[in-house]
Picture 1 (cartoon, chains in turn green, orange):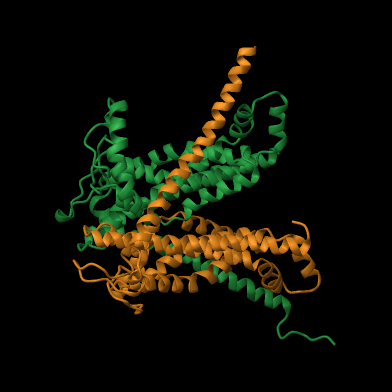
Picture 2 (spheres, each protein chain N blue to C red):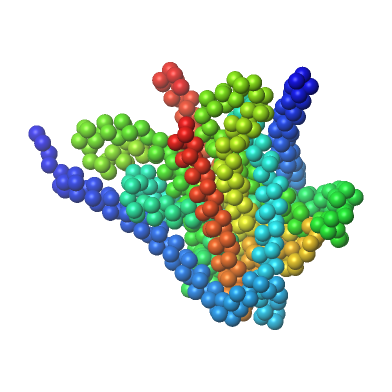
Length: 312
Length: 288
């Protein structure tokens, strides 16, 4: 008793495949529409200011004059300091969990680190505004001024909110990103490589340096770059603690503004056409900077993985 | 020789303790955040918070009932569209991963994952707010949906790729059409893991503030009208936190407390779901 289906299996599969392809096309189209619309909206500002937008830091909505250099500066500086602070900590945590702690305790510590990634950024902002900023103002700033005060970085008045506080919050937020990718990278190291180092009489630290950190160096760079990509786009936590004044200073205590924070602050209230367009121009810049950083980071991590796999 | 060995030993201990110290660098701020949110939040939380609307400016009291409902509504609407799309995209990427369209899709999903959420907000503003000429809950849901989509697609792809090939081959050898193999074997056998991925993506969307600032905007009233502005918990926390009123700041902490319970609760619950499955499997098979 063979029951023939209404439509053949081959046709059924084809239908399924075209349905899935349609959805895939839809998502791709959505992204293309997104980028086109963003460009169209930013075009008036591009036409008006051109490259001058990136080299000029004068931003005055009242006079309808816009230059985005100060935001570019704020974004790049806060994100770089954040990575500079977070990368060593994240790498050590990844090593500590993967190579040193017993598996079960390592898992618990890993869960705690992952928990940071789950906290909404508005909560980081709230905490930063009411607790980290006063602490930076009363404890950290006097300490830095008395020890490293000869550097221009640590001079000038401090209000608690500013580049330093924003970078610290950002650093904390990107630790789970960097450490989880580092963990993945370290896992691809074959065990015999580590055992070889130990057998030659290396101490544990030397083993880690020679056979874990060394071969996965480019992977670590990639992980840090992914963290940088995340730090560049982070909005709320930064908007709440950076002070939002578009200026370029050498002092880390001074308030500044980032690309994301200026959009969050001014977009809903922008009324002139050119103001909205200028903010969209900032968004396009932000989009491209994060895209390039993420793309490079992914390529590095992926290449490193392949190299290690082909060797192992 | 002996002294160099001692030095190496010392270096070893030094770096090992440095590694241990670095984990303290993370655990201390995490502990402090929880301590303050729980301390400030639990003391300022009361029953009014869940049942009352905000009072007029200057009066104490009131709650965030409208914002809680707003967050649930918008995340719900976003999920009802983005979850099926994300699942299908993930299935496509894992089952037909050699086709050029899949490569293009994977590139797009990677790109979307990296797009800052504030830029997604601008996109929703241009696409939904501008044509309708008003801030709307619909625009907010749209933005949240774009946040959910790439996260869910990624996790679905990763989960389904782990299905062993022999399972699929056995089903195909029995004469099942390919689509049945996909939906009845591959997807069904991983349903709980897929649900975990979905809940993680939703918890991420529930905590997002930036894309809602100029899409759903926020109101002071309970509203279920999708065409008009709608309040949400994160945006409400933001407006209250940067306000100069003590009572509003108190409520911001209460809001943060509720939000963190909601988000972490979803997150931990979904993680437990995985472990629960592992425990059940362990007893069924008798071996891990």
